[in-house]
Image (cartoon, rainbow, N blue to C red; front, side, top):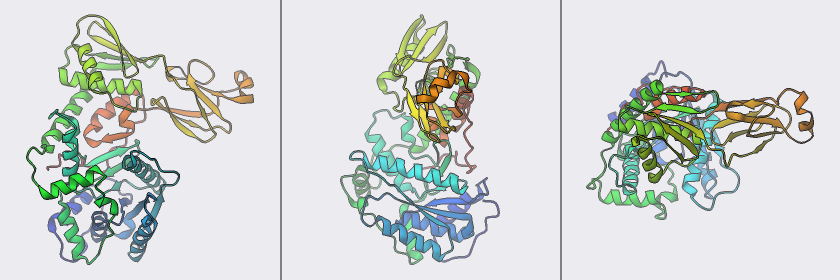
Amino acid sequence: MGETAMVAGPSASPSFLDSLAGFLNELADTRPLGVAVSGGGDSLSLLLALNHLVPAQRLFVLTVDHGLRPDSTSEARTVAVLCASRAIPHETLAWSGPKPATRLQARARQARYELLAEAAGRLGLCGVVTAHTRDDQAETLWMRQARTTDHLSTGLAGIPPATLYDGRLWVMRPLLDIPRRAVRDWLSDQGVKPMEDPGNADLRFERVRVRRDLAANPAPVGLHDAKAAQDRRQALAAACAGVIADRTRRDGQGTIHFRHAGVAAAPALAVLVRLVDLVGGRARPLDRHGKDLLRGLLETGVRRTATVGRVLIDVRDGAMRLSRENRALPRVLLAPGATTDWDGRFRIANRSLEPIAVSAGPGPGRRPELLCVERTGEAAEHARSQQPPEATVSALCGAASRILPVFEYECAVETARLAEAPQFPPCPWRRSAKVVRF
């Protein structure tokens, strides 16, 4: 944040404020910093502590109103009033429309990040900080450990200190090494009473049950070592970046060529999983069966072909060719001004004043990998004699274009180069790639 200056304030936990001051001094971007504030104790404490450390105009508070409870609108208004009293810019972002009947928490989280990303771009923010604490990390690790028997799973690295959402919003979590009690004690010292979400006591939610169990047993036997998992994940991502840079290429038809012979087993498999994700464009990651199949392809010494994750893989002479299989390729109608992610592989924006159709195959407006963009309806009758409709097409990088943990950034940069996709913006928190100790 540039000229960050400590402002004298009430007595506080030095570790809490010192940690935030260190975070601010490590920001390479001088634009205003977004702060996600729900009105709960953790986010209110984060906001008020930041307000002690930087001028109010260097912050911009964003409150997401999910509309899931009768009191949510009044709670957002309370945050707005607090911000107004301190001259801190504030905006409430409403999740409108019908709410899903299943996976409500996951869908609400997705909607929250979409709203934050749109607002951050519109307001010119360098990123958004959230108030995830060491306790949130413990809960996440406990839940993930319960779902896997693989103690080497990269998922057990826990919550990253920073995550890039949709290739455009860096969400940063500077409190991951601070206990929730220290954060709440600081707020109590300020004489501020937080609002409490009733959902935090609803035992229908897994995280609430885990929080209760951890409160009763704060040091459960077998809790995974997040630091070791984070170290492994960073090291593997760095190795993958080198392999992608040295041993992969993309030809004019969009086929990816991977020389896997001589690459160590772990990075070879990790790179192949990423390439299948890139070429196949599926929203769901490969399951264990799919990864076992890829492992078998790497180990074979004979020519063979296989289809995994919508990707046709041809193995021969220590190398692989990966291309999107020719089935289930969608045809999408796109209204003027609309944007869509076609087949999970390309982001297409209709810049014209007429509807367009996007499909696979040659035709007017031919695009990479035989992506066809053409007029529809009456305008299509004259398409052959006219210029292709105005549209922008950019490649996506699989899961990295949706959610990119900072651990994976180096690998994502090389994947974007390979795919000829827009490059991912660097994280403004210069030291966010450091391993957060649990």
